[in-house]
Image 1 (cartoon, rainbow, N blue to C red):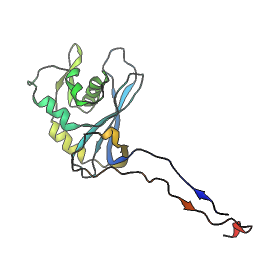
Image 2 (image 1 turned 90 degrees about the vertical axis):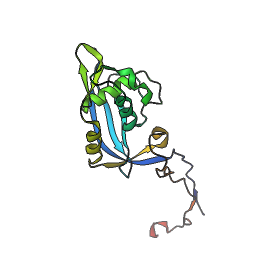
Image 3 (image 1 turned 180 degrees about the vertical axis):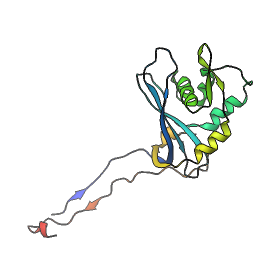
Image 4 (image 1 turned 45 degrees about the vertical axis):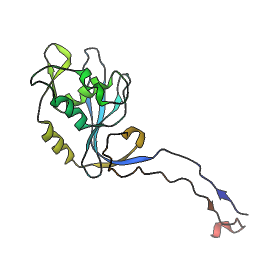
Length: 185
């Protein structure tokens, strides 16, 4: 008797990346509880630095998508020196529409020393630190391989990034005929 095993499990394509850092940042609101968890990632060639919000302790929606650091940095390049920056300035960094994305991104940027607080203004920030030096130093961190669904990567990586890795789909495998001596095989 011959048995055929079929595995029709279908999963989404993934993109191989390197996780450079996983950390948590304090929330900004005076009544906020918990922390914002985030990752700093890069492509296998270490050309593109990526930011990702991964978890929110205490509730509130956010997008899990990858955001290129250059997209964030470009927004700050056009700001006047020492001028307060409201969190909402960073809304355009995300495709996702959660109102929390920009504020949570500011939590990440503060934790990394790229933004500082404005006295008396919870949701305003000042650009600080050397952003290009921070990015270069971060890209040199040791990375652990991870694979993220291509849907989260979106347009965060350059066009010349290798194509997504398609998970192996089940193949039909013929099993040996069952015999009375099956345990001898």
